[in-house]
Length: 258
Image (cartoon, rainbow, N blue to C red; front, side, top):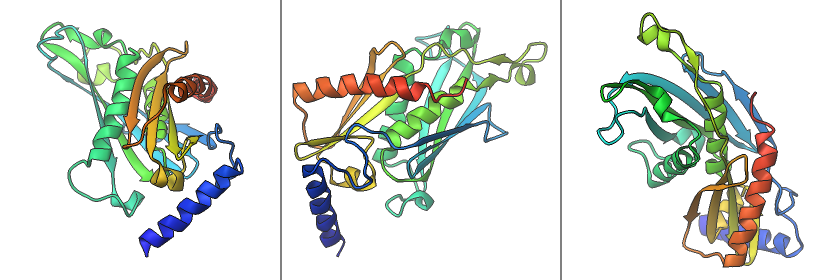
């Protein structure tokens, strides 16, 4: 029965695409409404809840003191995790992180890391001995498609509002605002047949042949890319997606917290 329903939905979505429409009446290059709330978790150093259409994610930032990696003795440590609980979708299972959760965390991490959004050297306390460890934890509350973009927006929003709890952990010091140098924004495009849509909804995501996420910074520079699914993109399509990602990133950046 599920396969029959999926085929019916697929035919319907394709038929709409042929007429230049989408199931929720958006344009092919239109992002769903975005709502960003910050400071939603009082026990976290920074937090943000992002609603992207019906997709709902919560991102929390926690910080602790630990040892640096041997090859980067003067840099703090960044760790990103994602949790997909069954409450958010019947397709999610409890237990160890799924491959989708691992991919989600890695794409969000890569966008922040490769854009050098956080100056990790400023999180060094004692070179080679003691540094700040920054944890970015993403919790999926409701899965309505395109978790990557929602999680990435949530991560940078939470980081922008993070206060390093120095006085609590290191007596005699003062808390300070986490230094955020760049604002990476991820933009995901799904392709089914010959059609490409920005910010795919759940049904569009389920029938997609290929997915491409491009993360750009405030200067329009490409900072990260992630190809998903077994389909392919032409060079012209990739170039189009890159330009689109830069434009959309600029618009979403205006919605980030000050």
